[in-house]
Length: 244
Ligand code: PAF
Image (cartoon, rainbow, N blue to C red; front, side):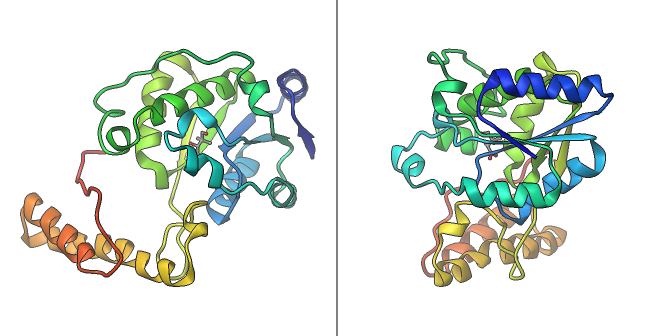
């Protein structure tokens, strides 16, 4: 496995793989890898002759400087896991390599990118599109793998791909721990008791499937919000039922 830091080297290595007739899979990540990422990498390794995993904490998608500062960075352990999973290339650039000059491009796909996370984290999806479009351009993959944990992100990237891409976006199922909490780099920052508290989210979402058999959409939403808010330490920011 090759660990590379420059765009020029990335392009060279990907070209060699393509010249050898290999299909190229791209797994974009921000590192701090867990079993959710591992499932994406495994799938790419199964389906593509060459798998590129990018590890880059993208500053343009953070609207909270503390979140960016505290985001876990574990490159050495990430590379060990990626290698064990059989991927071929880790692309781990510095910010200056990805953004030699400020990226002023504006991506807008309303309403998909302006509701929910888009409304609560202004600029977030613009930053995601900036970095993902650069990665797509650098790698020109046959398939790109994203986790359904960030379902809205997939919807935004699909919208972007209508302008940009002729390859496949592979959406992979959420991976949860034994109590149902979605694996996520930020969830890894929770204490043991916070993790336990957070399981109320998954539990209530699962229950909501049965509420939907007898309640209206509005009643389901109100019930879910009420139940989660009743758990000490929890406060719902939003819960929406949407057409996927
Ligand atoms: O989902 C993530 O980890 C990030 O948003 C992504 C797609 C790697 C872009 O930085």
